[in-house]
Image (cartoon, rainbow, N blue to C red):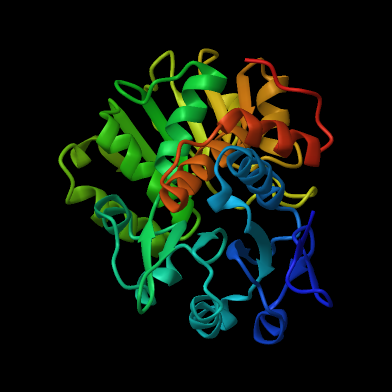
Length: 316
């Protein structure tokens, strides 16, 4: 997809842009973007631009909206954010590794994002950006649709304590999970997340565990949610040994491409599995609703995302 800036300059929404591009290029109309490092694998531009095309067919105010992809390293993020504001980017999605770092660089923060200590959706204000977290909503919808799991009353084993894990953990507690186990390789980051949960109503249902040794006396049914980055690269090992899980457990990996070792191992042990594509779609749809203040068709975003990944059509 290409968006015309003027008669001599055309911006490609399928390209991966950098800080240098942000300093030199012009993005007309109403630009949106996803920011991460790495980000080349992201299908967010495909699914958001598909939804924008559908919105613009019914409402002319969306005709000049476009969504881009930016690879911004952590050490560049503080410099980049004011430039996005200067270029009038209405909305930004944040992925690894910017969700926590952004908290110190934005203006207002929604209550759920403040509790989680992480944001994945920014909205442009007069002097800066306000932050929201749609990860929890996306995870909740994905678990219901893909695995038939409701967080209310569920036993959840969460792997990770970064930005995505924080949103997931807060959502689990808010939704009323029966028990939340959280494991992570870095004790200090894990402790930070547990301190957040301890201050929440229902936070007493959360406890830590070692990834190498699963909690004792697990119930017959539950769900594992991987929020670590292990699996982003094809050779990554699984973050835990799923052979220790009871046979009624299900496994959800927030990584949507490729098929991770965790999901392969889970499938080999007969466990129900799902990857993070539905979460990506539904958190993205919610973000676009925040920016556009209009209903967004998540099905159109799912179709575009699957097309971008060369996956067969999805049927509910």
